[in-house]
Length: 350
Image 1 (cartoon, rainbow, N blue to C red):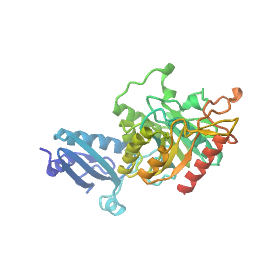
Image 2: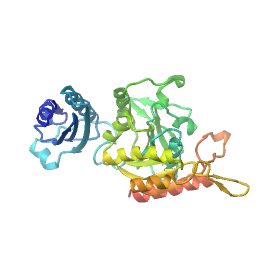
Image 3: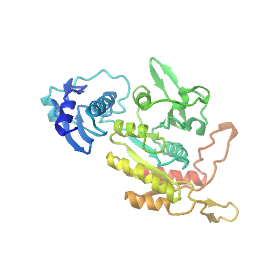
C-alpha cells in the first residue's frame, strides 16, 4: 500500500542533478498527498525548465509507480537562494547558446492550445506569430503538434534548418524563426513515437536550436491534454496560454478541459480566440453564424478570462510569388483582427 512514508523513501533515491543530493536531503520535497493510490507531489529543484528536470520527472514517476501508485501528479518549483547557499550552491554547466529556459530568461512563452482538433489552432498560431513580428517583436514559433505538424506548409516554407557545429539554426519567414517536426520527417511520413521520445525531441527544440534573443516564442500545441502538452507544461513553468475554440458549444466544452489543465499547472491564461466565428458576405456585408454563437463567451466565463478576438471564416489573398497559404496580410480585414489580438497580448505580457 502506498503511504506518504513510502513515497518519501522512494524520493530519497532520486537525486537533484544540479546538487548531486537526494530530493529529501535538499529539502526539495515540498508536499506529498496520497489518496486512493493516487499520489500528488510538489518538488523544488535547484533549477527548473532544464533537460535535467525532465530526467528527474521521469525518475520520480517511475520510482513512485514502482511502489504501487496508480498515478503520479507532479508540480515543480525552485529552491530559494538561501537554500541553495546552505546546500553549497550549484555547479554551473558550461551551456553554449541562449539560456532560453533559464529562470531569468526574458522570452515570453505563449502556448496556443485547444481541446480538440479542427478548430484552426495552427492558423491562429502562425498569424499571431507573424503579427507580433510586424509589431517589431523578436518572435519564434515551435510547431509542437508532433503528429499533425503543418506550420511550414502554412507559412510557405520550403527550405530546411541549417546545422552548424551541432547547433540547429531555425528557418526565418516573415520575421519569425520557425522550427517544426516537419523539418525532420522525410516525405510526409507518419510519426510513430512514444511519449518519452516526443519529450526528448521537444527538449532538443529548446536546448539545441540557436534562437538568439526572443521576445516571444509561440508554441503550436497538439490538441487535448496528452503527453506533449504535459511535458511542455512541466518544461515551461511560466508559459502563458491562449485557448482556441469555435462558436460551437462542444468545441468550447472540450477546450475548457485544456484550460483547466493550464490552471492546475499554474499557467496564466491570456485569453480565448474564437475562430470561424462567422462568415461575412463580401457583397452584402451580412454576417452568417455558420457554427452557431456563444462558444467563445461561454469559455471565457468558465475560465474567468477575456475574449481576445473573433476570427471570421476566410482565406488570405494568395500571392504566387510569395506563397504562404495561411498568412493574412496586415491590411487584410482578418489580418487587422490578428494585429489587434497581438497588440492586446503585448499589453498583457508587459
